[in-house]
Image (cartoon, rainbow, N blue to C red; front, side, top):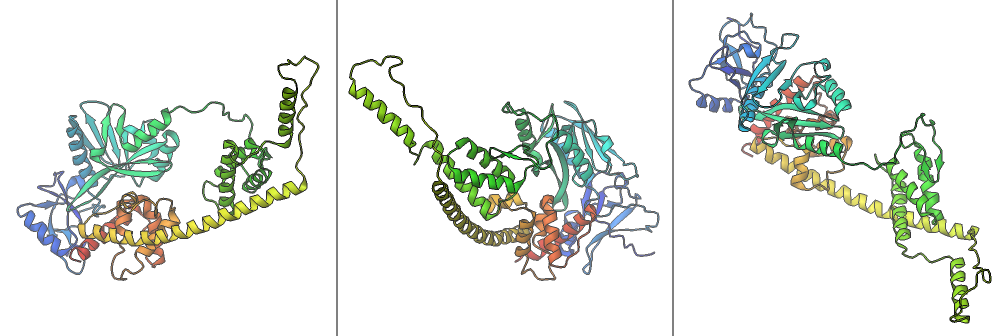
Length: 502
């Protein structure tokens, strides 16, 4: 009999028609403990896994990962999904049925095959109370085009469908399974335009409106909140290069950043028109929302300080014209005590607008330049302090991931922020996150998996940053999401074994 080299990682327990899945440990010592926990169980290439229905044996290996192998000849087995995630639809069915029962809502569930014959196409849940729930693991956008995202859970790798639902509804609910010992644990995530967050099942519920997560509730609150009136969409498209009027750009979506910053600098130097300065400041903050350089940051801070002083009247004196008018009025009243003014007999002088001289303008510009330079210097110091905090954050992340490896669990960027504090990690984008992950594993031996694997596995939103960091170490990762997940899970199991006794 030819040796079976298919390296199957999942099976079902009890018989070919069983829906009780199991994941085989990859390490030999873990497999020994697994066998002791399941002395009487039999393992099968189950039909609900797309398998041939034949019996499997757990093969102990030391030179490669442990795996299931067919006891008889496996030529007639056409099972295509063999990795640790190949039984996720069975885990999802078990976990969601238990989740609904915990809400006193018993349900039935049906596994549906995909159009290509893959058994893990979808799982349909029909609860006794409320609308149904459909978990799509392999589908196209036509299947959900007209349905509410609250009644659908999408596999996290269905990127095209996610984008379609986001454009229409503002959010979409996702589903995934994560390692949990020798089984897999189901999580529900919510993806919005600002990112995605994963939740344990006990944080979620199936309501009359559909699947509710903390993130979904936040989106609903935002959509039902009151908004200020008075904003109107222009009937005609704005010009390609908008003009700056009164310090603000006509088209908020097509502004010229250079003109906006220059308008703010001019308004700051003028120092008289509060409304103009406020409009310029608001436009500059919008233009630099994705990130400001040191000059822009300095101008924005200086303008904010100046606007605060002007609105509160701090350091602002009345103009000479106003002073003279007030003096004359008081003099007139004091020279004729008790005497009423006769209409037409006395006319108050009209205040005249006094244009600032060139020297005044130059002095104001110099003051604005000094304020901008001082703010830039403060910003430089703050940036240096932030870099130091990020270096401390790298050490904290490394320590946290080592602890997770010893515990045999994964982590996420949000959990790390909660654990080590938000300051070092809060504002980092993909490139900054990649730099942190690279620094975390800079001293990791080349024959060991990257510690940041535990972040990529626990937080798929970090996978782009993880790819960048891994490429700097010369590591090529699979493009296919399923293959990548198999690699990450195998590396995670190796990390658990390495750090279990460290």
